[in-house]
Length: 166
Image 1 (spheres, rainbow, N blue to C red):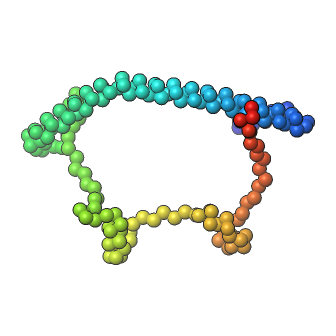
Image 2 (image 1 turned 180 degrees about the vertical axis):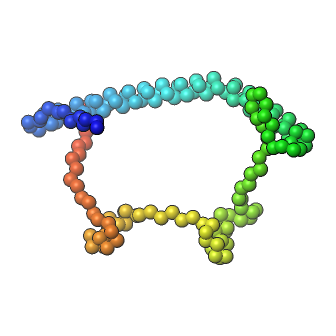
Image 3 (image 1 turned 90 degrees about the horizontal axis):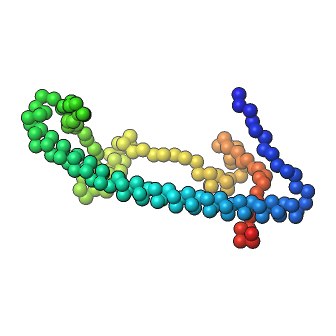
């Protein structure tokens, strides 16, 4: 079992020390923000350079894929008369049957859903249910208890740093 590391801190004896700690936190936050900004700049620059370096390779790959597809389509009757896949030294290729459900022209998703409901084919419609906790926050404790929920209140410490003052 892993050992838990207890947080270490130095005690504060008055509000002046507390205020000094807030000031130090604000300075650290500013430094962390600068570090994050520089990191993101470096990452953005690296992504741009990588994208530029990869572009000719992507273009060449797309051209090669297009030529493979054209060859396979042109020779489809000969190559695939008795099989669906051809295995070669550096890979395989073939044709796969696939199907997708699409709306007919002039029909929107809402139209299809309405027609499914009208015909009683509700198993073709998915509904995701979730709790609306914002509404439940307005309920009385008795009402929450009646549905198997409860309100949990906690008193959490918070602080806010005035960065513009540092």
